[in-house]
Length: 296
Image (tube, rainbow, N blue to C red):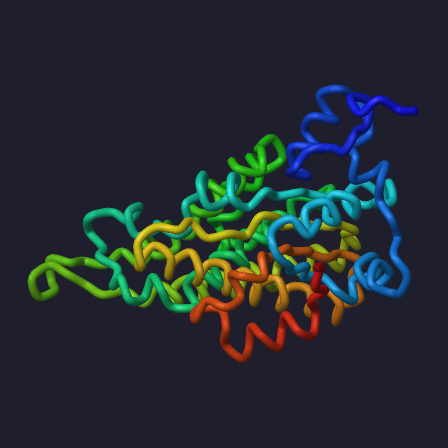
């Protein structure tokens, strides 16, 4: 008989399992106990046909992402991002308004619009992919913000990279050089979404030219997309961030597929969050239905 104390069941959280296994130089339970279930679900994840995981808390989304990450072929570059810690807390995309200089007041309603979060997240995700390029061509002047921070990316942690890119988003708007002294009462409303989109169009064109030239093979894993259950306004901002991250992941992945590039971004979402009114819209629902795999 095997004594109960010798039965190993692993940790409640797969990310904790990963870090503890790293510390003890052992194999995590999600690797030792992984069962490749019947059907094509796992094959679709590996091939990239499915790249959105959703399900209730505890259904194994993180464990599956970690398993995919651990079993990548050696010729792939990868980044595993624990969204809660590395982006929401450190980069604070949901609170960008507080970072603007006193000379520019951004309409708070614009902060909640899809395009603002959407383009901010596209910039961040493209930067993560570009960080896996062995080298890049000279950066065009129209995306000087990236030229300035590229040298720092190679020696930065995931959280530091997120903070650097977030600062560049703020800078894209402040670069408008608005002279508030000429405006009534010294207040100006800036369309943040359009400002970031203009800055991002050139960046995306450059990024994909580099992905194609250097045939980047990378996998980005976004885990623990979640809401901080705060006041109504805070919850709405968090929901908008989750929604627009899903849409940004979809567009980048579709472009990677279209250009026949072997790179992909995976994302996991708690299914209970999908019912929030900011997320339960047709475009997002169809994206999740088409590209998603539900765990139960």
